[in-house]
Structures are given as C-alpha cells and as structure tokens.
Image (cartoon, rainbow, N blue to C red; front, side):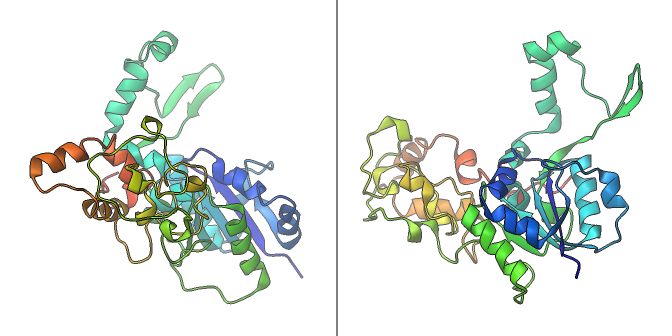
Length: 320
C-alpha cells in the first residue's frame, strides 16, 4: 500500500518553522516512515518541475510556512494548492502574515528607497539601482520574483484547510498534528486551528495575576521584574490576554513577555484590538491627557500589538 505523500515549503519567513519540524527529534524518523516526502526544498533536492509533473491532488498533506511576499511565493502557493488534498498554513507567517507583514505599514517604494537608494552598502554595490524582474547577464537573461506591495497571509491567496500557529509551532504540537493525520482519525472541520489550545496564554501562565492598575508601562530592560508576578501587573506589555494558548507560556517562563505568536484566542477577530481592550481595563487614569501620557510609554504600539497579525487584521491592506 502506497504511503501518503507529504510536502513542506518555505515562503517569506525566517526558516524557523523548518527547523521546528526537525525539533520533533527522533520522531522525524516516524514521519519519514509514515509519509513519502515528495517536496522539501530546504532539506532535500527537489525542483519545482518535480511538483508540476505530479497529478493534481496527489499530495495528501502540505505544510506551507511563510507569508506571500512576492510573485514566486504566490506561484508556488497556487501550485501546492492544486497538487495537495490538504493545505495547512503552518506557523505565524502563513497564518497571519507574521513579522514580514509589518512591511504593510509602509510601501514597496519606501522600502526599496531605503534599501537601494539610501543604504551606503548597496549604493556602492549597484549605484542605487532597483532590481528588475528581467535582468540581462553574460549567461543570458534571468528572471527574478517580483516583490509585492502588500504582504499577505496564505489564505488571502489560496484556500486553506487548517492552521497551525506559532513562531515557530512547538515541537510537541507539530507532532500532535502529524500523529493525528497518520492515525487515520477523522479530521476536524475545515478552518480549524490545530496544535493549539482553546483559551489564552494567560491560562497557561503560572505567574500570579492580581489585575493591578497601572500608572506607567516599562520596557523589560527598564525594571527588575518579580519572576512570580504577572508581567502585565508589573507594567510590562505582555500579549498573553490576547493570545491563544498552546505554547505552554514559554516566554513568560523565561521572564520575557508574550509576543502574541499563537494568534488571537478563539472568537476574537482582531488580536491588537483585543489587547487594547485588555490594557484599557488596567490603566489607572481618568483624564484624557493622563491616559495619553501612560499610553505614550508603550514603545512601537503597532509592532507590539500587531507583531504577527497585521496582514490578517482588520487593519490589513487589500491591494496587491
């Protein structure tokens, strides 16, 4: 009996999700035993042509990580969708656009100007010229992907069956998803979030929360925190109240505030708005001027509240 076919792909992301797959350690041998791995460019020598030659829906499971940043990302997303029965947005970037999605706060033109016109290193190398989609070289003309003006999540480009959150997903959660599929058990309804909990990160956190009122917010290096007390109670902006459970509250265990990488909890439309709501209940002020002063103490609000979710939020851009 033929093994089910598995594909893994890395689009616009840091590659941490690829490493996380290997972090299941010796269980990777069980994956290799249970699946016929037909595409995993970061680890094995596969070509796009190999996938194009396969029959549609011949791949049983595709774990697609990374956001859609350029024309190549979109082309391969559509190719893998056509060839796969089950498409999984694997990790924060595929799920919500991730950190690359913060580029949507500016424009392609501004980014390119910063990198190619204003950077001393690239000015010396190429005279401040922008890359072209077609470039003449001594060996012949080459094509490079076109950078999009808007970063998108995977499901804004192709249809997706399931989502696995995390930056990266935790190894035990990855294995739980793979084990469920290998077992042959009935799969959950389309659109389900796999490898995560149904509550918030705060529900997993062992720190004691007393819901103190705050007059000031601090950055983690500015104060000596109590390792037993809730970080938010100490004035550290922690995304735990607006983040889905499932990671085991690893960041707060390491005395680092939750960054929000597991995405919003169930039934929450916008993670940033949820966090703003949580903060509004702890600010100890009534006058608009004082409220504004306290909020001004939060460095980089967009990068804090929407670090992983901007491209998929209610603030998202819709144009290409």
